[in-house]
Amino acid sequence: MVARAQAAGSDICVLVDPEIVLLPETVTLLTDLSRISRDWLLVSTSRNISSFPYNLANNAMLEEIQADKRAADSSDRGLIFAWNNPGSPLLEGVVPSFLYGRGAHNRWLAHEVLSSETRFVFDASSLVLGLYPEDFTAKHGAGSSSSGRLPDGSWEYGVNRHLASVYGSYSHRPPGGHHSFSTLYKVVKHSEDYMLSKVQEPTFSRFFIGKEQNAHEEVGSNPWKKENNCLSDHLRSYSSEVYDVPYSLEMLLQFVADQNRSVVLGVAGASYRDMLMSWVCRLRHLGVNNFVVCALDQETYEFSVLQGLPVFRDPLSPKNVSFDDCHFGTQCFKRVTKVKSRIVLEIIRMGYNVLLSDVDVYWFRNPVQFLYSLGPATFAAQSDEHNETGPINMPRRLNSGFYYARSDSATITTMEMVVKHAAKSNSSEQPSFYDVLCGKEGVNRLGDDRCLEPSTNLTVVFLDRDMFPNGAYKGLWERHDLRSACRSLGCFIIHNNWVNGRKKKLRRQMVSGLWDYDPSSRMCLQSWGVASSFAVVE
Image (cartoon, rainbow, N blue to C red; front, side, top):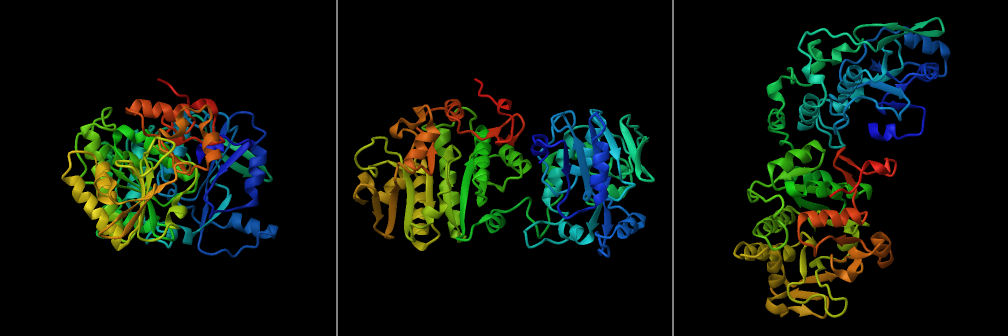
């Protein structure tokens, strides 16, 4: 949100909770401050109200609001931020990936701008620039809402406090310590004019370390002790009988499944962390929100939690997954792939349809509705056949990195057979899929693009390669303009397989322009971002 505001073409950016009622004086003050040539940041607390007995069209009522001596909200909510010259840095360092509305980020941002001394900071809390309804506090506080938000005691608040404690200088101010800010001014209204008065401490100092205990009322105790900087400790402290830490797979599925109870499953370990994020960024760009991520290791799990991903940890995943040697054909690859079919089986047993998509699959369009339309007792999978002519359902040509499994009895029984077959095999899970679904040497093939599993009558559909091309089909990855070529074919996705090694895979996808993540800023690449901020390097 901050980066988007910084990239805006406006002279002044305002960042505010949508529930806050901004009063006309906000515009008046910003117009006055716009004449200041230096970079500045305005911070103001909102007036917390239980009712709204005012008529904003009546100037007398506006004066009544200013005269009303209600207390400002002392939590992290209700702050109004505004700053000029968005092209100039807001602060030194970076803004971490706080989860919006989950506490700590407003206090952290105000403190870091003050500490950076890159801008004047104007404290306008003596004025009433906004009204903050108490029911907003209730909605974001105790009790979960219909939107699925969790209360203050949830793990998401622990994530934000962890980020605030390890980024910047926010947590390094000793409790009770005094610090004067050389760039801090208080905005005072004199008659119809605004004046700036130099002050040492902001009115909203309760937001900062070492001040009144209610600055940490969401926690119940000071979370900024150095020994509390471990994310695992933060997450464990938010466990309860009601809310899993952070979420169980069952809870995630309830949150993300679409109207047809379909979910998209991605599986990744530390070696494919950046590719996971590019995959997630692409799904978000397409508006695909019904996805979950299975983390193969604790590092990927904690990273995903900090990125706000709907992630769960598989406790049975193989240990010591190689960083650079876990590609197709390796023993590591064989062990890791068997996790996917086991998780898919677990999900369809819970009553959800699953689109398993490897994170090296690039999405041009959302295929879920198309795959769902194929009907029950149908298993749809990508063909790994590289020859442009001939059957696409030949032996060992079923790709287990992209398939759609419905939650019906035929599919569940067949997936149980696949998982059992793979568990006894020294190969990856991919041959087990073909041998179970299409029979040894393809004895259960139907025509050139189907199979029929005889004991369950499950129909296996090998997807049209123009719409679901693999990494060797028509040499698409070698095209100068891969995106245009796939648009002409009508591609839903393209698989970045048929290439050996993690580095080669990453480079091919980046060079082709099918990359949506900047690891240096840990942000999705956006059309409003600076194109030169991310470059492919060896």
